[in-house]
Length: 520
Ligand SMILES: [Ca+2]
Image (cartoon, rainbow, N blue to C red):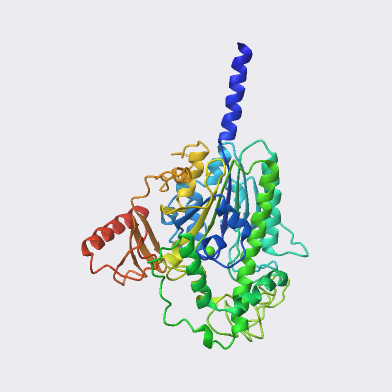
């Protein structure tokens, strides 16, 4: 009898340990909605696509359209303004007395926690709940090739010495694999957060990773690739047959008439190479999970922190991103090698001494079929792919869900699945009540009671969403526009004139939200 009792106790202990899943949260930086193969893109992302093939893709998941505000919300489960973030610059939560971070709560709740990649805090990640950390404390523009000022790299709490053959995404991939191997061999469940900086500008990549893409983007340009993506999205069920993609703004040049096609193609080829490099890292992480037998009990979430970035111009130039001719810039890189300013046919992007972006024309292809880009509250700024992979729970592969969600939901999801409660007090802090809601019902194939509203205020956009309806405007001086996202994801038909009562109701709600979160 006593033996039986002990056996039951031991079993229940083992069961409760396996019940709590591991978390692998992977976020890329400035990647558009349709760059991944599984969202209609032509970039080679076989490993990320395999997550979609065995998991669930969200068609309406949202971020805060800029790096810092998204990260602040992602890690705290709060709107960024609630923790002293205006939504217009790119640092981490400013007011830690009002929030807690996911790793802090999971660590206190028995998880092993680790992070690789972009950290923007005033203090180090290992002081904010991570047992292990590798990456830069980002305070300025970065190079993928070399150490630069304002972006010191740390391994845990120690400054990290750069290796001879350093390339940032490769270093992230290597450390993610190392931390994951440590995590799977430990007794605790784990939370690994990999925050890539790719494919954020500058366009830096190794020649061998660019090469496979060169011919692809010389063959056809931004408009034709956009058409190809729309066709694939319609076939995949990501875009209905009737839905109209966002129209091109009038200033987008015609690819057919472009005089510098090889340079334009090179810009997209380097961008694609950066995403491929992330995909290789995801493949290596998947291999570690498979080998350890822990893939089935690991919830993997893959998303982007904002829409594709418009920076980089339409035409060749001899300056950009703060680098100008006849203006010395040999103090930015720590080895004092200067960047050759500008970008063009005689200065192709990719190498260590270049600094370029791919420009709005390609960014709109990345965001196909959505309107506008990073920083905007139109869908091209705030809508992100989200892939969820968790074989133990998500049994039916290749699924799509149209239920909306937001990065504020990740905190609630992790706590729910880890059987932890959100605290009213943590250390000496009194965190505000969570704004996010768990995504677990959606992962289990059910309808969840979603958000009554979701809302945004950032430097170049304000918006509020209620169900399929969305009001949006680029700034406070312009009238609100109204869109029905179920029929019009491209935000092409402004329905504000037809539905004045709905606009009034939603603007009232926006005002209540604005005061609730303390947005200006
Ligand atoms: Ca970003």
